[in-house]
Image (tube, rainbow, N blue to C red; front, side, top):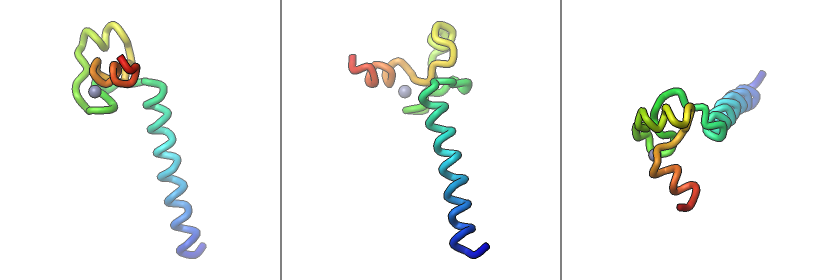
Length: 66
Ligand SMILES: [Zn+2]
């Protein structure tokens, strides 16, 4: 395996990581309680009402265009 092959493996691993990350974002499977967009804390009552929600109210509103 030469240097170019090794670089390709690293890039592939990073791609896998990025894909997994974006899939988690799309699924909204958020266990951290922090907004995926602004990293702000999502209020507990919002987390309780929408289990696994990935965004705070402000970012969700922006996405929904309201
Ligand atoms: Zn947010």
